[in-house]
Amino acid sequence: MLTTIRRYPPPGIDTQTARRDLWRQCGGPIDDVPILLDILIHMGLVEAQDTRLKVTKAGVKIATQDHQSGGKLLGLALIRSGLFAGQARSLLEVSNINPSRSLSCPKELALSVAPQLTGILRRFTGAVALTDQLTVAADLVAEISDVWSLLPPTAGPEIDFRKDMGNRGELYSYRYCRSIASDAAKVRWVARDDETLGYDIEDLNLTPKRLIEVKASGETAVRFFLSRNEWRMAHRFESAYEIHFWGGVSLKTPAKDEFDKLTKLGYPLIFRGLEGLLASKHLTAMPTQYLVTQADGD
Image (cartoon, rainbow, N blue to C red):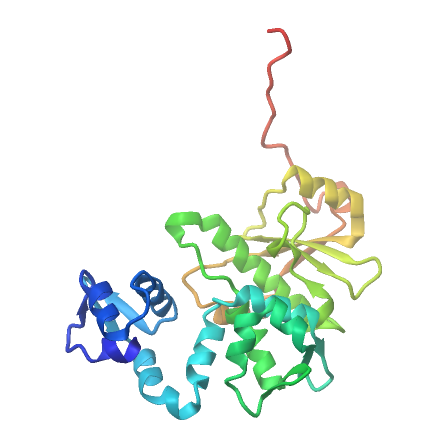
């Protein structure tokens, strides 16, 4: 599809007729064309300008050179897009990371938790082998564990700004905790599977395990809200419960660049043992909501 769009002379293909024209030239189900276009736009390989679509510089490189790399250029772009963030996270958490930082995982397990990602990784001959085990070389493991690969695609500021901001913060803490852990596979981003736990990340490297709730803000002043469940869990688990605060977060900044910048500034700020911090006045808290109900019989 990239090659087909690239054939259209400037200013590009008309967005109103793109679905029909691309389907005629590329084939396949016509309803898949808008989905594929959205993916290419998200990956930065195609851009929409006014009423036209055209291939970006990155898209031209893949369209003209991907066949020479055996599909590795497109594979790397797919990994870095975050489209397979869930599969990348699952694969990392069920695999063994060797001292050389390479990865190994039983074949059937890899295919069950990351089927499409495993298929993409097979493009990287020499760095990946799939026998009874999936093995991935350290350089490629670094790619699938980097912040840009693990961050889910944004919902968009107009859809759910708070959700996108929360994903950023959780991703940064997940990446940070894995980078300092003795066994990175024991750091789990549990909120991706269950948002009702009262925390986002658990680290099994310590006993008792650490439970980490993550807060992110565009402001640098420490100010965040805790749900009733988060408040209860913080008091229940005391010093085993941590709150990570990331300030100055911007959804407009590339995740990798921002993560590097914020960690150099000393983030995340880590608050451990909420009850003690409140007692010492290091933090203060106030109720902001009240539940009002009608008495029976009224």
